[in-house]
Image 1: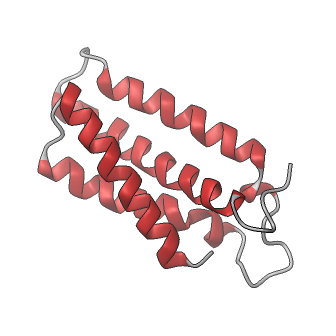
Image 2: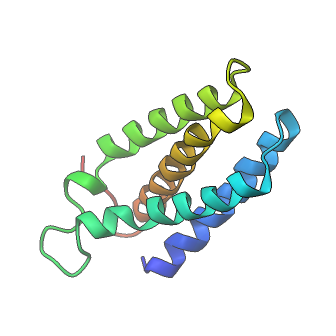
Length: 120
């Protein structure tokens, strides 16, 4: 899958995530812009770590194990963002991390739908 496809999928996932969060707790514009940068980084990170043109593409960082890990990490950071213990300014790292893991997760989900799929 091409890099621009991964970016579009990541941006769409972030818009849905932010929309759902706004129903629970407001996401301010500054956090959302930083979230866009974080989801973009997460959406391309697997291909930065394992270049698509190399023979080592789709190994460890494109595996089902990492897919599960990023899903869990996304869930943990999203829950931490929703906890009322922190002030809105202190929640920015949690939102950025959850956006990054969301982008990485959906990169792997998109790659899993291709003919080559993901290795164990």
